[in-house]
Length: 583
Image (cartoon, rainbow, N blue to C red; front, side, top):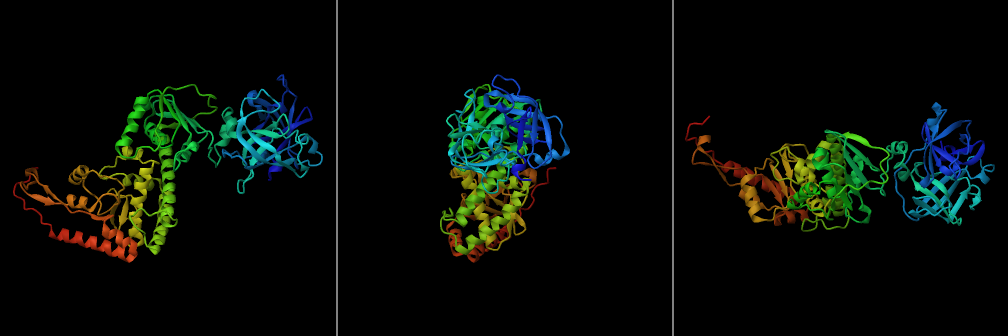
């Protein structure tokens, strides 16, 4: 069914007053002045008539917001076929000079076009103070310039001809957008040069039924970026935002700027939020938020300080304010999640966002003109094969949440001997250093795969890759301090057989291969056991030369490293037991 069949002509006591449309099978929206006088008195019994249909339905006003001229109607005689007239809603935002469609039933065009009129207009300003005929309105309006208005099919638009369009729907005119409604038509301006509407996301702030209808939107609201959180009880958290928890990754932009002006308002202490609290810290740290309003700023700041120590400081300083100001407007609808479920939704959305940004960065390196960051040019054919390899990996990682989280957290972890990812996951964020580390570690592994060695993401307990049927670990940690290198080499056991280290040098592996002293408890007092180091692919001179030469050279480099490890293994001697085993 086309859009013009879904916008109803609204009558009050039989008189044509404007337009209305269904948001679900039992509720409709219209402009308030179409159903009541300025003094608040009703214009009479309401009827919705759908063009080209015998369907006539009665309605009553159940909620109003006089400050922005909107009324919510309830259908008093619903029928099963009304579902086909329901218009989907969209949280999609819009920009200046964007084309939109406004459909409704201007009174003077009703006889000539009983299906109503579609007005094509250009948005003059997407959010502007209202300045229409109803001076009492207090809202930010969609302002469409009359200079670019044309009425279809009734010819050029005029201010008189558009009376009755009020209560109609504003729909994006972009190709492929379908008929999802982004706004409600209010009325024309006082001088007849503009038409005013209101974003459906603003309406949803006040009407719970509209908020519920918006939950099916496939678009993300890029205007209202506030997130409201409060603890419902000891294990549940309440969430209210124009964006769903499964979509919060959209708040992470590659580079923070004016468009990332989001905010978070939390009514409870951090510890009261449980697992959701750590997920919110991760979200807020890298979203470039204008403010985080909480009652315990010290606890939030303490968690954010850990990111600095890990070398993944947010690109934009996070402003945490020790207050919870009153929210206006108050949420029309709260959604309740278990703390664990909310944390899972947030982390999964952020992981998907990071994966998407990684893919864009890899494309820029391998297909675009950006420097590969491997210290030299990657041979052309090898670049192409690496991109093909990544597309296969991307499909795997996109469709498996557990594999995706495992892959990302291992990139940012040296020690893979523990399965406690919580601390690492919080720091896996959308900052320049983090994205760079992730990109380089992934490039290192892709080089080998594109050169004929089987490498792909895999949920190994000892790494994040499978390499030639063995375990592999792509690690993007940047440990430049020599003392830290020594400490790491002496205390951390590489569990993987092949490691990819874009920042850590071969010298680290040489340190790692040292002897481990054995004790009397082990029955070999005074002896040592030489540890077997993994095959290490690092950005040393020989590796960079092989990358520039192509896949065959990279494969030869890798096979040489494997041979060196085998020789090391053959040279190892096991100590003879000199003491009775202390059991």
